[in-house]
Image (cartoon, rainbow, N blue to C red; front, top):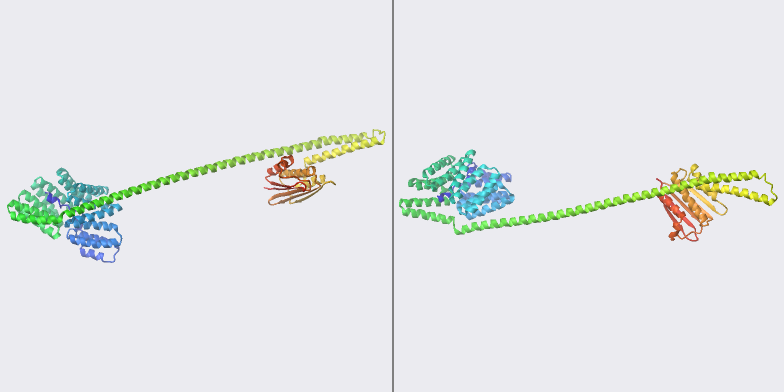
Amino acid sequence: MTKRQTFFLSLLFVAASASSQVSADSLRNIINSKRPYEEQMDAAINLVQHFELKNFDSAIIEGDKALKIARRNTDSTAVAELKRHIGLANYFKGDYDLAAKNYYESISILEKKNDKQRLAPVYNELAKLYRKTRDLNRASSNYNKAESIYRELNDTSGIAMILNESGVVYEYREDYNEAVNRYTASMKLAEAAGDSLSVSYSLSNIAGVYVIEKKYDLAEKNLLRALAIRQQLKDSFALALTYSDLGVAMSGKGDYKKAIEYLTLSNQVAENLKYPELQSNNYNELSEVARRQGDFQKALSFYSIRTALRDSLMGLEKTKQIEELNAKYESAKKEQQIADQKHRIRLQDYLFIGIAGLVLLAGLLINSQYKRYKLKKERQLQGLLMKQQEMAAKSVLEAEENERQRIAKDLHDGVGQMMSAAKMNLSAIEEDLKFENKDQKESFDKIIQLVDDSCREVRTVSHIMMPNALLKNNLGAAVREFVDKLNSKNTQIDVYTEGLEERLDSHTETFLYRIIQECVNNAIKHANATSIDISLIRDKDGISGTIEDNGKGFDITDKGKFDGIGLKNITSRIEYLKGTVEFDAAPGRGTLIALHVPLT
């Protein structure tokens, strides 16, 4: 029975499509035409399939031609497909080493492309090759790969094919129940799909089990059903397999005449197909039939033919080559796995570095944002402090100004009025007094003059402390009025103003007035100046002013000079107005004070 199991079901996948192929000439016409490359390559692959079951040599020749076209167009998918078909032709010719080489090359391409639809049939063909060499573990492994893909693709015809093919492996392992279960399951799927050819293969497989179990009548019944289907389909390759299986069954049954007839028919087809393996199995069975009939000479003749065919099929060197190809494939696969693993490690390293970089960048950004936030808060706090200082300075200056006005009012309305009343009373009693001599009269007149001078002094001081001129006139007029009261034969003060006709903010006018007032008083009282020049100019940027005197000056590098009340008052008022002030002085050459106040 093992003889039959070495060749049936070998072309289930391609046999179904072979019957639908167009003629070889029409396919060649397409290949040689100027049609698009895709159409030419489809025709080339179909031409190889056309010869797969008819002429293995022609299939290989046409396949080699098509490979050149595919490689010229860098079409690796077509190369993989052609390698599978060429490998199949090598397999049926008995060139198992070449078949394995082509299968592995096809698998290598398709695995890289993850082309599962094309990969599953190649796994199936490779499994059959290992099944042929009795490497059952590798055969099962490849069948499982193919079945997994077909189930993933929900391909019932593919699943049915693998159930049939893998059932043979279980026969080899003598697990006949599992083998029959797989054949039966395959047949049910084929019947549901209306695939009569696949049904015939399942019937042949089940019949093979019956032969092993010596149930020859049941075996013959199933094989005749399969034969009827294949005769209707006119599938010569499948008919050759069925004739061979019937010959084996009839030999076991003892009907040697029918056995010889079936085996001879099978050999005729196998010879036309150049299928040496099928011929080898048939001659082996014919030798056994001749031996049972007592014709030992014919038995020896048949066995010699069988041996010659078998030796050409399965030499030791070919087995080694297949093993080497498998080793190369496994080695290449492991190298690819190692390369993939290294690539994954590199990616993980890059990912780790990237994440670390992002974390570092995020940390820097957070730190930057925190510093910005901190600086912003510091600026806000500084601004708040400056505002508070400004408000405090403003409050102090406003309080000082209010106090000046209060004192000026008290001097004018209080002391000034009292001094005026005293003068009036003295004048009133002057007529009632009888002066004894001229000296008394002069003394009385001096008292009245002194009171009169005191009244004028109080009035002058009160006007200086509360410049009424600012209530009536602009800053320029107020400064001129102040200077007019100070000009004397000992001190000459000149004033130049420009652009001050328009009134300023009351605070600005008051503070600038006080600054000039302070500068002039310092020049007269402390510097003993005899000449003072005052300049006030208003332009688009603000008010610029200079106060220059010819006094004794001072050392501006002496910081203690700036601790005095006068210079402090000048500086604080300028800061309140958000202006700038510069001092240029030296002992013996007078003082120049330059200021600028912006106007908003």
